Image (cartoon, rainbow, N blue to C red; front, side, top):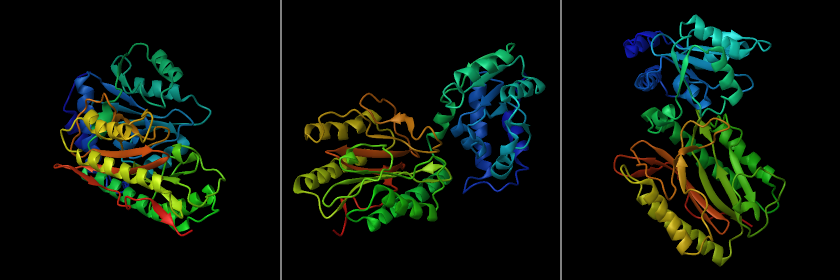
Length: 397
């Protein structure tokens, strides 16, 4: 296809936007995002992109469809994007997105045929087409089916393109993270206020969820809080059970609220009564180690070196026998099932550089205790967005 001034084409498309866009993300910002994405398409000689990753759809267009049927957006290098979606979901797109033209199908129709027919109708049957091969919603079967119906086209991999664009947050995105961090702090406060001997994990989660939702959490992923009553306190990512809180026993509380799908996170250890002297000392040591790690976060810092500060200190102090996980990871738009940005991991061999505007969930743990913060990289260092006291949180016994 002839390559034209796609940025100018985009400006013409977005001038008519009159929908109410979520939170503080403006139509201008969505337009800038699409321009940057199209620049990457041009660099890869891609004429048409088939976008189906939930994170990309939200980042570029402001909404995430359900995954029960295949849905995607066809993004030409020039001209208007075209959504191919379930007819049932059309009101969602109209209400949440600036997208205009769309193609709908009913639940008894084949979505892949709809995609193929639309590509052909737009004149891209013989073009170079990009796909997000790392998308959780593009199965192997679906990818083969699309390529089979568009056998005259050539295909390119667009994996990771949008994730690179998403790494540095705009001022509007940072405000979403700030709002989510505030919800995390308030949710943690609600959890401690509800904490008492004999309360179940379910009851504790209910108190946290109620506060988080009332304060603005709008999680599209299913979880707002992860709770572990000893001995499960040392196990991350477990579901809520009927286990009950015991006196002087550590409790793991992790908050994962989202505001406009941007996630901020917070971990603390809590207790009814008080921890024994040894565990209290371990927690204090974790705080000191993480404070030293956070102080090293600044633009230009090497991720592996920041990881090593916490990892080596915890292992040398004997707080863990082994350290198999990362000490931090990227945050941003979070859409189920991908619940963290593991393209940006703080691990021993990480060579990527920290940049201004990145947001991370930094966490350390040992002896069944844990502490974490949501951290924003600033031009001169870092800012902690979560503000809960960095201590063991206790409730009256």
